[in-house]
Amino acid sequence: MMTPEQEMPLPSEVESERVVLGASLRDPSCYEQAAKLLVPDDFTLDSYHRLFRLIGEMREAGIPIDLATVCRELTNRKEIGAVGGVSAVASLTDGAVCVQSHVEYHARIIRACSRKRGLIHACDALKARTLANEKLAGICADMIQTGLDYGNNASGGPRNLFVSATDFLSGAPQEIDWLVDGVIERGANGFFAAVPKGGKSTSTLGVRGIA
Image (cartoon, helix red, strand yellow):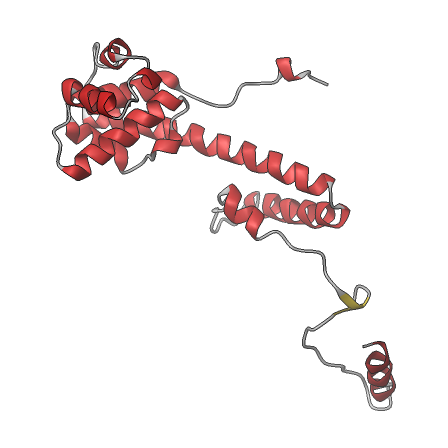
């Protein structure tokens, strides 16, 4: 078993993040291209998260985007230190390539890493919840196996098997309050079916007695 120090780092591509931010500072149209694919949370570093968010807010406010205006806005918000200072922001534009196709390429890399991190965090959260709930562990194991089987189905079909951690965990099944253990859920609707004289009335009276 690996120790925490030996565990693999979370997926990230900091150089791609630098390319996108540098191009956005040089050419606002590059930001527009990146913003079609990315949100601030897709960036690994907090400083890059802040910069991408700020550029978006400035664009919405109609403030021109360049190195000077961005640094001024960061200073006004008292965030210039949080991004490493003016020199750190300026270094993003060194050799920046302002080609939208390049920006889109790097934005897709960033988004792919962000999705992988999201899946890892979801699995960690799910692990914590299943350790505390044995029934939930079994249900989730069945769900995961079903998803894997579906994804490996050679016949094709929709492959959107993954959702955000928040949506997944919010939809996790709660412990069922059984009226008849493993058969009838308390408060649920249902019906009895059997051949004539098969004991439907007796069974119904028995369930009424339990309820």
